[in-house]
Amino acid sequence: MKVSVGYDGSDQSKLALSWAAEYALASQAVLRIVHAWIWPMFTHDVGPVKGVADSGLRHAAEAILSEGVEVARGIAPDLEIEPRMVAGLPSDVLRRESLDADLLVVGSRGLGGFLGKLVGSVSVGLAATCPASVVVVRAAREEGKPVIACVDGHLRSSKVLEQAVSAAQTLQTKLRIVHVDPPMPAWGRHSPSQFHGRDVLRNAMLHVQGLDPGLAVSEELLSGHSVSAVLVDAGADAELLVLGARRREGHPGTLASVLTHAHCNVMIAR
Image (tube, rainbow, N blue to C red; front, side):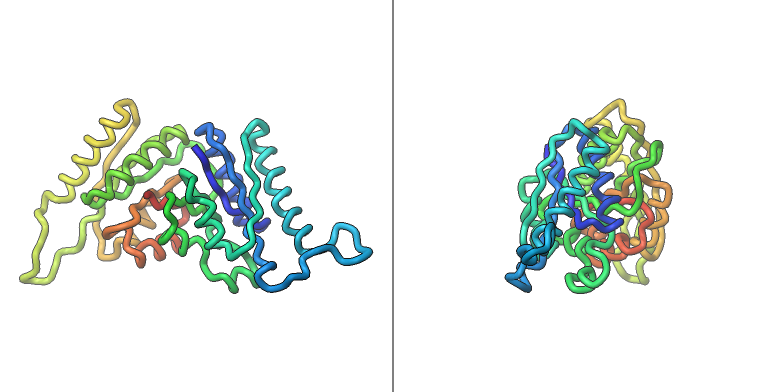
């Protein structure tokens, strides 16, 4: 297994790196630390300043990456680490560097300060387009908090459940399955059966029990006019909220809203 994590030295990326290192250690995975080096896109003068030791943009980038490796080593001294410094915009670099990874971990805000405004929302963009599953880290790891799998009854829900089970096993915590029933439609429009939500949850429970019969798992039927608001509330006490990349819970607008407002870490399962 391989876990990739974006690191730029910001507080958000340090939080993401710590979470990724702990997860990689627990899952016996290789940790790839990726620093997207943006300055070669703007200038060729990246080398040291003549007569000034340890200067230049290249040296600064190498120092950031080395710092990331040291942070990871402090968490897990025996962890296998692949440091990577790649020129390019963070979203493009991280997307390419996650092609052979099982999981990509990023901070909730991407690059900070001026560069953050320049490149836009890295985490939201990657959550919508990255080929690998993505975890957007907003909070440090806390023992005892559950993993929450958000299912909608479509085929993509099986991927959500499989990765939620794997995450719960890795984090050694319980799993909660939730489904959000849509509000009642306007008169004359198609309305799903009143038992639809319960059927979705029952099928999800059966799927999870087939994956890991011994896993502690519960189910909850939720409702509300805003799916994203309901999911944000559901994740208030969670370690990880797992969403699909498609369908209602995975709609781009829903993903962006959950990633913006969630208090917990969010996984986009693929």
